[in-house]
Length: 127
Image (cartoon, rainbow, N blue to C red; front, side, top):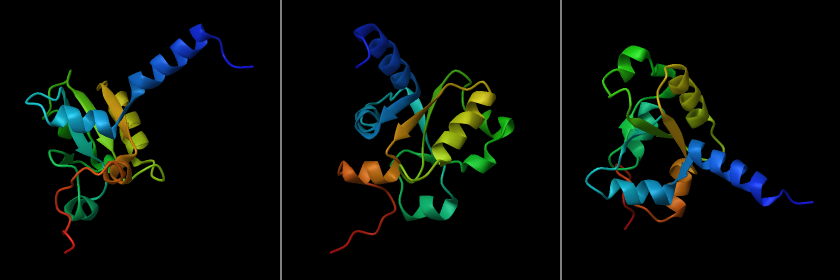
């Protein structure tokens, strides 16, 4: 049988506390104050080839307390990687949470961003 409404409220309320999607990130990034720092956690070559405009590149393996100290401690960090087939964003979220940083994962990553039809920076446009 399906879960009851109270259980559904708890489940999806909790899920949205951990995740955001490409559409919501895109809308927020179009504003003057998105309310978060967007971090591409892929390697430098992947980032250089194409990334979400406004994202900073910090590969998850290089996230340290010292490196993250350049961002205000209370600021939400939204992380993304290549897509659903990649767990780099999850690894980054764990690493950031261990540092006491507020974090969400942008589900879909780069592949989700492209599927939504949103532009990327660094990608060569085909004629």
